[in-house]
Amino acid sequence: MSSKKKTVTRLDSNYMQQYDAYIERQKRKKQRLIRRLVLFSIVAAIVIGGLTSYHIKQRVLQAEKIEQYEQLQDELKALKAEEANLTEEIELLNDEEYVLDIARTNYFFSKKGELIFKVPNEDPSY
Image (cartoon, rainbow, N blue to C red; front, side, top):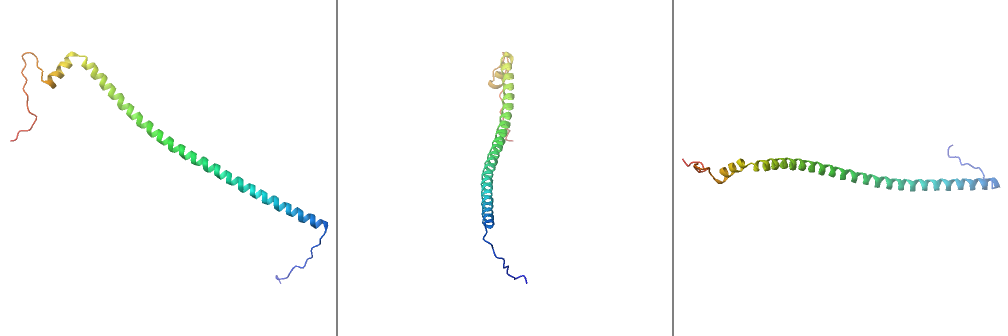
């Protein structure tokens, strides 16, 4: 019984023509709306993708800069320590006693009446 054909005849009246035109306008409106929404979605996806890509690049760049900053901080600490050592050495080299002591130990200079014996650094062979 569900296979019954509907046998309703369509009347070609002025009202039906207006109604068909209204339905056609509604379909076109809906189709334009869908096209606008699709276009807006594509533009929004492109913008969001571009911003995401830019954000990721900036985070990578920031991580690199932070790492470089930490390395430079370590290098600065090492240079400050070296500067302190060199400043201390300059102060010591201004002292004549220290310079004479270095000359005696490194270059075998002696005081008056002092004898220097050079001992080899090698181990004996026995």
